[in-house]
Length: 234
Length: 272
Image 1 (spheres, each protein chain N blue to C red):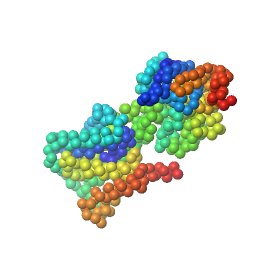
Image 2: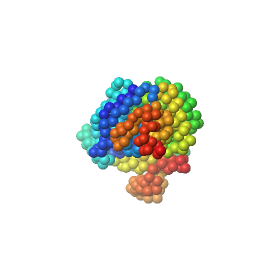
Image 3: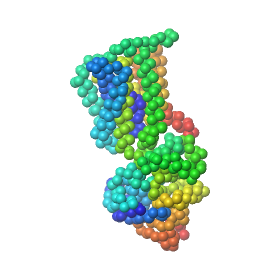
Image 4: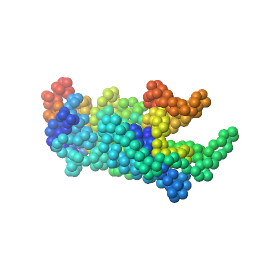
């Protein structure tokens, strides 16, 4: 479904991604692991077309999107829930969600999408008239995921959804990701919480200083000496 | 005019120094249509607003877009240059003579108790209120309006939800320019003008926008009322020639005391 080949991205002189290749098949949850600064966020930003790759190709459902404008990527069915959530803090929760359905592919289904998001996150429904900036971190994360779902994506990319949240909220967020996947949405998950991410994902990639250094199924990754030492602290 | 300034700053993060030139052009176009074609100046906005919206969109596409990523000084200088050009074009077309619109409506007055008010002033005041309400509805109830606010608050998040930021920039700039021209068209009913028209108003407009908060229209409306009250009271105690001084004193005080304006103050209170 998503195929990245030989991707190279840099900011000015600094190269962040070096010859990265990965693929995500329809229906999977794939996690992208790696330490801070490994280039995980950069990879997602390149797919969402917030930055220009220096070399390599990104294709989605067999269409090349390496140079497509950001709005076309959303239109094609990729939504990103960015690190730090990036809600519009001065707008109401509901306005945040409604804007998530800005893409043409989503406009006709706004009411249904809104209902689905509220069913998934009842707490968000209670808070729908509140100003987004006044919500707790966990609630904001749910709104951010909801906003991503409002565009009715076939691939949802989540960047550090557990960052800064209390363990009990993290469990809730991870459960919602599982539920979203069960409805047929493919998920690419970037996480520093490696144990949690590997519980969800069927496959994973390990990114280190801009290169994919390892890939495999959940079992392979959990069994690997490197993953156990570096990311699970075992 | 202040709304236009606030909208363009909010979305594009540039200060539109050409606003005064657009205001002046709006006044001239209104006057010219009245003088040459006997079009009632009250109907002029019907032509002025769409005309300048298109002009604004074109200006963004052709000129402003090129400097959006650069240092603020670049767009400041560029738009200051545009202002000078507009001024000189107006001198060439309409000469430097002072113009004024005189229709029965413009001169008519009404007595409210002890006050004598001109209809034109009442009309301009109401038009300002209606514009604010219209803008607020547009920005909160339509997809495009929400997208404009989204780009103003977080450009990247807007991109991630599929908002075409370039298009929003162009539309916001177009609306900002149309608002400035509309203001010029309205003010041509109240004041006589020449190609330098708008300079002082632009400075006051900055005060109003800073006072209200750089990206809040309700705040801007409050700012306008507060500033005009301050000026009116000030006039009772000092010479009329010092009137503009009040604007700047207010500007400096506001910038020091609460730099995010009235709206920012309210916002931080609401968040606790």
